[in-house]
Image (cartoon, rainbow, N blue to C red; front, top):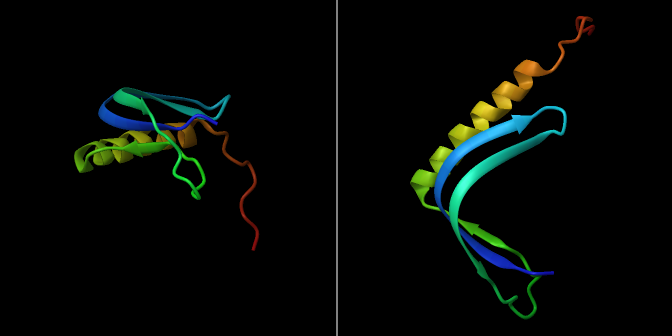
Length: 80
């Protein structure tokens, strides 16, 4: 498995598809190969600033709200 270090520079856009259940983020990022550390499971790292993390949270919240709004509502009330 190839491992990478991905440093997010800027989030540019977000979109979603309820048919495939995918959220797509368009980003500017630096991507470098990363050598696995012996004895540790190989993983790709994604790093970002606090400001970019806050942008990511806002983008994800918007996309998930949009996806939830397009799901069909149940016609039956809850019984309990």
